[in-house]
Length: 438
Image 1 (tube, rainbow, N blue to C red):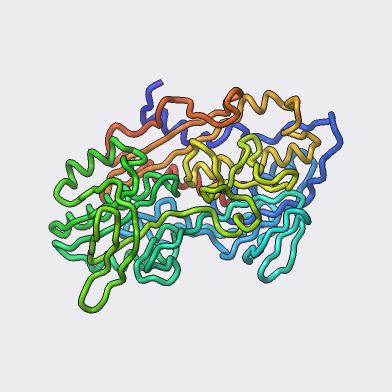
Image 2 (image 1 turned 90 degrees about the vertical axis):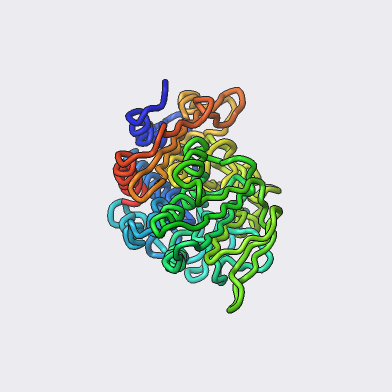
């Protein structure tokens, strides 16, 4: 089946095949799943907390779910590039986590997880002490690698790759650009959060400079090819932004040079040094130290999981699941939509455990579920001030390879960007926000 706009919209709404409460099972006594702790209130964590609670109540095995996040609301990275050009306000992207308590009975703690004790099945929090769990779901997002001359939290050179105050600061810096100015940005080696996002940002800033009369957007890409929506972005860079965007492939970030009163900020890369009036560093990233310290990450810095349940494969019998950007899930991209999709597979697994179904038992106790696990990732990318493109990909569990695989040779993308896609982008985002946070 060819990917058309209508097919895309249909696929984008199907985030996981396990979209209904699990069936009651009487073949085994219930496993001890009464308390679940979820760390991280983004698309993965919020969705998992919501569906574990909702589905467990639906099958008369109510699970107490505690969601831990340092902020009272999650600010979504989805659509955040539109804050940079003024199309949206940051406040429009803030999702109050209290709605999960009001609507589903999820206990929400505004706190920070400091340490995980897998053998004791407890999490140490900064303010609320140690809390026990039968199952722990980790969805803490990303952390950045160390880069010489740059601190992701304090540098005047923003990453804005975790939506929030840095998004606002980068917006303020972009407002200082004038005709002929240069914007420099770095793209980390894949895998990284939101594969099309950096190229989308390059287009948003290029459009801003074009409206000012011209300038340069220098894209320093650590990858040898555009990672996502290659046709779309190659076309945009070579046509409407051909006099603005300079895309340098294989440019690995080495260091950051802060600006002074007499010299602009710059970055040192394997392709040379590049300075600009505004510099945006998106550094290589990995799973946060919380997971590394608990022994959940591999040598690449991500947390390997079993896609049947999203349980860690680094520790046995730990009751720990990892979803979203932190997990090492081959093929599946790190995106908000994918995190929502993985969360439902994870939630389904946890509720089935509570019903007495050990999904990792041999032989497989639930082959119908295993054969029908699917996930989906979809996104829209603004290309101009009022036009967008889209990208979608569907995945299914392969019984032979024992991993998720693409159901088509390549992800599908829009044949072109247009205003209709731009309008559809807000409908897609609204549906995703509602499904995850309300």
